[in-house]
Image (cartoon, rainbow, N blue to C red; front, side, top):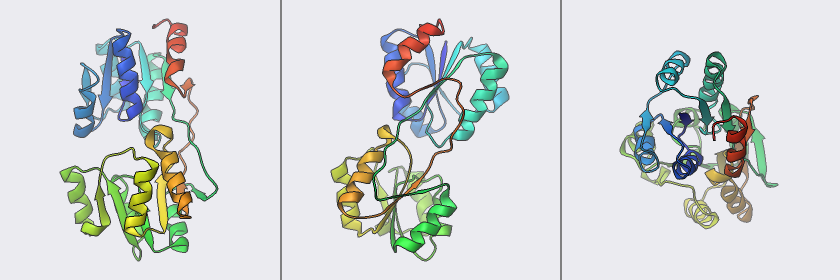
Length: 250
């Protein structure tokens, strides 16, 4: 049994491939929304957040022989926990890590606090494409600026943004990834003069954001992902068969 830590489009592609090759697997997600998507790609879906101890127990009960970590690049706590759990249970761990690209109009920062500081120096209308999870921190850090937040069109997510004080013209409820043209249109329509994003990689529509902003000469603040020391890391789905063969799983 293979345990896939999901929550990204990458994990869905991996799940499709595992289904096609008749590999038994469990796709794990953390949210109800993720579960809805996951059930379209996997028969066996687990929804919930697991501690290290819960991972070890779950993997033992399901006879898990391999863990594939395809969580979001910024879900580092999950990845760190999974690596420790894999080490303790002696289960092989594979990290599927998105590649990323950059252009000349980017400002690389380490965290949200630094992103807010740089944004304050660059403009007044800040287009956030970082999701809803850290929205409270941005609202606090960009207190005197006009925020436009692009978030999932889910009722509880929209409600949480409104509870933070954002009004209709500050909320774009849409699901990505977005094309360059869609990004450009939204930046133009909102009058944004700064874009804040995370170093999410190709599958997260990262390059399309950068290119659209570059065409409009809008600076982009990129929050860099935390670098982890993965025991095995792959960047493309085509690498998976060889790795599984080496681990005698495929």
